[in-house]
Image (cartoon, rainbow, N blue to C red; front, side):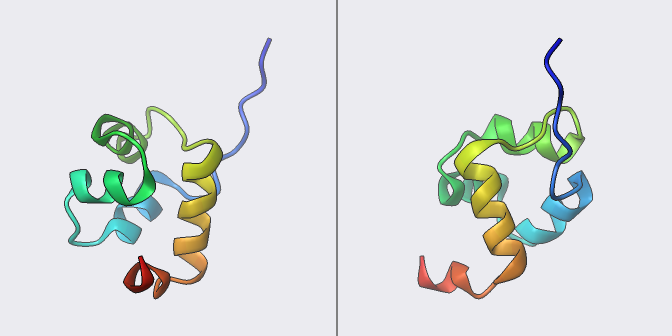
Length: 68
């Protein structure tokens, strides 16, 4: 059985991080699909790989969005 790892950010944390940005724009920024962002924010899936790393970076240094 595969073990699920614990998400670094909660579904509410991801929503807060996205702020007023549309889910589609947030997905483009992270290089993922809008449906993935939707599923993360609903708590049905957790971010993995590069998206998880980028979310953690944005959480720690929100000003990095301006540089992208």
